[in-house]
Structures are given as C-alpha cells and as structure tokens.
Image (tube, rainbow, N blue to C red; front, side, top):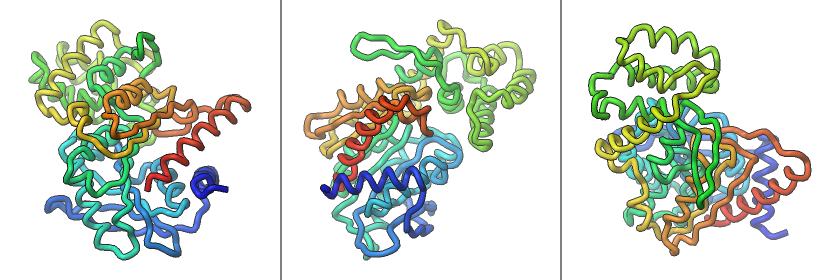
Length: 365
C-alpha cells in the first residue's frame, strides 16, 4: 500500500475512533511582543516531524473547538506534528485579519527552535475565516518562504457574496443559483464588527454589542445560532432598544423560526461589505491571492450554512496557476461539524472522494 494511502487511512481511523498514541504540549508563542497560547500535538515516539500549523476561525472555543481538536489529532496520527496557535481576538469574535501574518510567523519561529520538528516541512491549515486569511498571508514572501503548502477548509473568497448569503441564503456558481437556509451566526459576527461603520448606523453601538453577545452565548453554550433557547435573550435585548435600533436588530435577529426580509437583508449585506472594506481592507482576501505560489488544497461542505461551497470554488478560480490548486466539495461535512451521512452507496462514494482528497493533502508536507 502506498505510504500516502496508509496515512490517509490512519487519519480516517483516528477521526472515527479518536484513539491514537499522541502527546499534547501547551506552549507560549511570542506574537510581535504579545504572549499567546498554543497547543502542539505529535506522535509519542520518533521524530523529527513534519508539521502543520492550524488556524482556527472566529469562534469562542478557539483552538479547543471539539471538531478542530478531533481533526488535529487525526492529522497527528498520520506521522505529523500539529501546532494550533490561539488568536485571542478571534475568540472574542473580532474580525482582525491583520493578526494572521504575525500569528503564523510566531508559530514558525517557535517550531524552528525545536529539535523534534522538521522546519523544512511545514504546512498551513486555515478553517472558516482563517482559511482565506491563511491563503492571503502565505502570499507574503516573508511568510510563504517557510511553508510547503496551504490548505483551506470552508473559507470565503468574496465578503460581499458571503454577506448576501448570510441574509438571503442565496449563492451562485457558473450561472446556477442555489438556496440554503443560512446560519444567523455569520451575519451576527459581521454586524458586531462593522455595523457602526455603515452610514446611518454610526450610533448603533447597542445593536452591535447585542449581536456580539448573542454570538458569544451560542458559542459558549455550544448550540446552533437558531436554537430556541436564544429567543429569550433576543427578545430581552430587542426590548431595550429605541424603535429605529430595534428595527435593525430584528433584521439581523428575527425569531429562530423566521428569516430576515430578503430585500432589506440584501441591502444591509451590501452596506456592511462596503463598510468592512473601508474599515479593514484586509478582510477581503482576493487582492492578495495572486501572490501565492505554494500548492493549495481547498475543501468545503456542500451543505455549509455559514459559508456556501461556491466560495471555495471561487477561491480556486482566483488563485494563480502556480498554486496548482484543487478543490473538493463534499456532503460529508458541514461548517464545523460532521453533516448527516448520506445513504450507504452515496456515503461509500463520497468517503472515497474525501479519502483521496486527504491523501493529497497529507502528502504535501
């Protein structure tokens, strides 16, 4: 059996069983003078190991997110080390793309000082918000020269298209329009960060704080943003606001059984996107993707309700030929969890597709 296939099978076996002989070590990284925690997972014997640096997304659990831990343990079981640096600001739900490069550099610096790590075989994973930011950061020669490859899971390419999806559930690829009921979490996060930069909403700090509070509570409880137990918080927060503010808040956070008005929602999506680009241009990854020269692999869940799968296809289209990029769209996984498994025959077929994709990923370092 080829070595790459054997590693992919070990990955799947550990993902399913969560049983592997691994060592976990907690580290402190120096991110441009700021100490940030990180977790290193590696096999319990042997080395030095090729290593993957893994960036989490905008999520309260950060590097301790259950599905991320499960994934990184499965990768480490294939004969790699995995370093997961914390981005504390992302745990606080701040969209702070400028921290991506310093975080990666701090991880590389720490790994290069270790005798149990092969610093000539480093790869980079990015999840959700961390995926396009990882791709964009790797286009910087000062970052990319230390890496062998970049892999993105569930990332976006264009903020505006993604924001429209957050409010309407509509996305498009190659002339075909798709509809999926979106997870409210995405619009809550963007609103929490950029609503007060929208013209006419400059005084809506209370709405932005309420959106952040709801997103944080969903993350802390580990529940869906549509969970009915958040309805009480929604109603309480809404009642505290002046009518004009309440109207905007209710657009972002209708009752759990309802969706935003699609016309007003799309208008807000465009306004938020323009405000975000002015406030922080780095939130749009596409202008920096053309500089990427490393091999790229992209994976995305077909039924993703937070970022639509068309965004990974659009990411691949935006990458230069030198990246030799490949994309796998699978119904096996949602955004940060395993999706409902298809029927037996489709499940077998999709499992083989995913196995081939992971074999290609793991052989990159």
